[in-house]
Length: 492
Ligand SMILES: NC(=O)C1=CN([C@@H]2O[C@H](COP(=O)(O)OP(=O)(O)OC[C@H]3O[C@@H](n4cnc5c(N)ncnc54)[C@H](O)[C@@H]3O)[C@@H](O)[C@H]2O)[C@@H](O)CC1
Ligand SMILES: [K+]
Picture 1: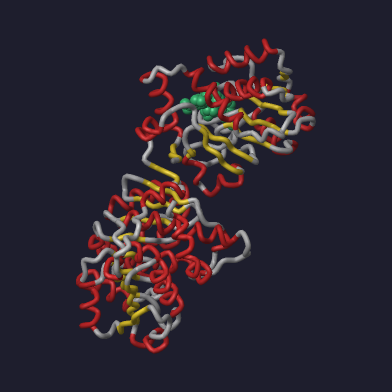
Picture 2: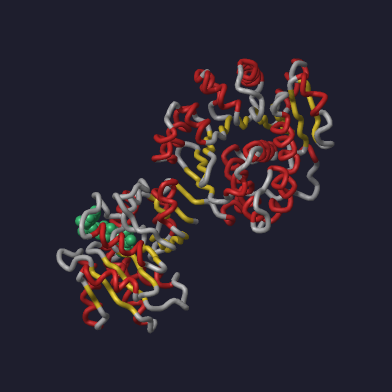
């Protein structure tokens, strides 16, 4: 499992390892360098390693030794040769003793970069603590301008590991090999263009040590598989629950169909779609597996609200007083767990007092705009630290929050899971409605609300990613059709 941490987390793991576990810093650095080197394509050769004076630079000097021992051609550029950290100095001295070509004249840097095939950027890591000035601005500019292939050690130099902001300028890496944790700053969308392909490597610390300092996790297939409940041979439809989808309006009938069909395909035993009276004719034949109900028939609705195992509320209902009244009615007359999405969220934003009624029974699935409306935070404020914004909201209202977008965040106020599946081939209308149907269906099948959010977002993005290998744009229908096939694939 890959844990996410900011610079503080890195510092805490570092000091625990050194001071409590008594692992000397130089050993951690050696492990880091060896594991970093292990990620480098063995066909690559002719490396220039650009080293700063802190431990990130120390990693760079240690990587230089490792590469030389693999018979690679290696040169080193030292940004500064005085006032190095202790472990950096040790590795610098070894490189000198080994006779590795070393240069520290800035006027030679451009030519050096041009004459090497790979630049390893070991200028700054988690210790970057001020804006970049000369000569570092020039060093980083040269790397970006002339580097043919750039691999950053731990963090692209110039990026803040906690926030993802740049110190004015930053290395644009083709690959970033990060130590111990996936840096929280990498989740900031503004950092994406600097990171390249990210890989996280260990430095010899067992998972239980890392876990002490981070409860924020990048979900992977193995983790999702561990959450899945296998179906027993003798189970019947009653075991897989009844999902009520409250969605759609005359302008947005598609949202209702999509959510309902996604719930069916995810395996809910029964699915009922409850719609406004004027949509009933059109939607009653939307899918043979979906039952329909008229929202104006209050007795039928009350009966459904009492007996269903989960409710999805919101897609396509319209952001208007009628939807708000309906939400109030549903909250007052049902204890079933709910997925609230789209216009369900929009009307909640109009009447925040209702949020109190969602306690411990809801997952909200806003995208950035909806989250901005319901939280009262601007999109800029949220984007600066999506994890914090999501956690704070989840804690304030005791709900599970699933903040959609690239790297979707799912949190129950303490633990945070980040979903990395999915891509922009899925950026079209109806995707959110699909996720809502999937998530509600999972809740009906006895998954916890939190687990349903995690599995739902992973599965949804996973299908999109797989289909996008052979298709340019993926529609909600494409996803829905493929749910059962890929859901099965998640059972390892
Ligand atoms: N357990 C860990 O966390 C480990 C960390 N390691 C490495 O250690 C790195 C952190 O090392 P450090 O804390 O020494 O920090 P860095 O090596 O990132 O940089 C700190 C040095 O750069 C200077 N500096 C910071 N911002 C500057 C700026 N804008 N302009 C000029 N100078 C600036 C500081 O004064 C200091 O000398 C990590 O990124 C990682 O690469 C590895 O050695 C493995 C072990
Ligand atoms: K770096």
